[in-house]
Length: 271
Length: 322
Image (cartoon, rainbow over all chains, first blue to last red; front, side, top):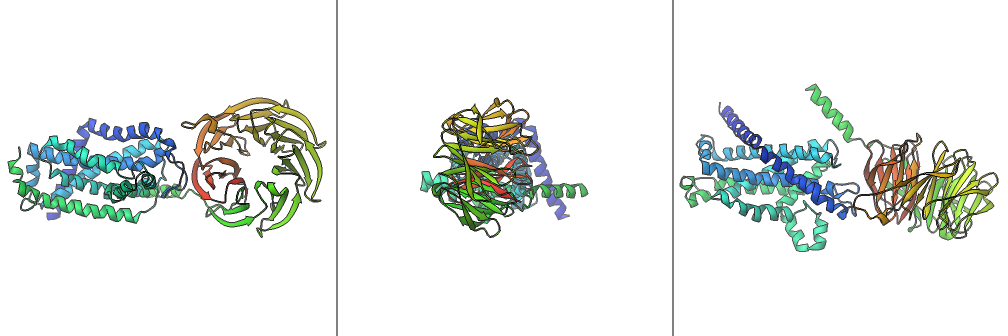
């Protein structure tokens, strides 16, 4: 009975998130167009940047387009993670979160459901994107499309958990711009998404060091290796560690007894 | 469920599409004075054979028991045993041999002597030079017709393809091509000879009966300067449908539809791709990349470069044994 309840809760949260995604067609296109713009416009100018050295997991020379695709997959998940944090804030402002939070199920479970729902949406976006990238001749081994699924799940959960944690800090929807400036951009640019670490190290050893500590770098590398049927243990450990920290933080933050909410006065005072 | 399982199996089948290959690849390394022996299955270097200085042109004897390699700076041909992988003999070559071609009958080796504007004719059984054919300045490319009757030599500075009658050892015709012709390759039916021009940036297709250029193939690679497109190595498939041209510092191999002479695709390989060789089963194409010191492997069925393997210093020529 109880398991049924848990299952029903997960299903309804996932369905709601999915419906929200499907109904906002602009959001779907925005999510797809953003990485495609990078691939079609940005990457073309950088075509010759790589071609010079072979780095794992690649076995031969690749064009920049091929290098940047896993980074853009990471970007989709990063934006999606932040977007679900945005929707948490929205839900809170609109009061629909109360409906969720009055559920008899434990708070942490509700948060994980919310998280999984967001990740599922991001994975759909990713598959559509890598399907389109196939026509840009970014064609990883066919089995790579399967192997990347667990990697996407891990990285999506990690980035979604970060979004959840951040959403507990944001009081109002308008503050989302701050997330863009202080989280999305630094995480994306100070990572191996756009340039390999050796390239960053050539330019700035300090930045390379930051990139190595950046969990987003590890999410991208995990995806990159999985897509080419290789396994990067360091990246997986780093992503899982970050997931534990972010998710733990988010659960603590959304705990009405302790957490940031309690300190800030809780959801009752919102609006 | 069975459908899904079948789909998964199909996927698996595609994933292991780098099929086992029993090829052995031999690469001459111009700067490290050696031949790298690469195992076609594992795609790793299994042996390195020391040869004379500046080895470039490389070819098998008729039964593939020996490798002949031009040791340019030592003015000789080194002979390598393909089983023991050791230099077992030396042959005279004339001055500064760069490229050569073995006649289909397997006895005579025609050698381009870059420094003294000659093509030397070596009898490989007698190990003696039996003739010299004066040609243009800086002879380089050597191609022989499938029937062995016509030899084509290109001279880099004269920018000509010289048609030589192998019976009389005389130049019978000269065809002007674009600047710095490097490689001459006959089609399997002997009707055409393809000549690459390194500085001209083109490949001229010459009709062997009329000895006229019937088509000039030009190249353009997105994001690559025109000067960097320097066609050198050429290979054609036996069935006469596909041709591949190495484009030097453009780091690309152009794939050409032989029927339409249209470039179908540019394959990204290592830096300064120089010469090309097809595996005997024509399932793979191997390239030598002179600046990045490696060899790239193109899967002919998937039309994709699948791997690059480090070899010696400045790899130049490549040949493949089944």
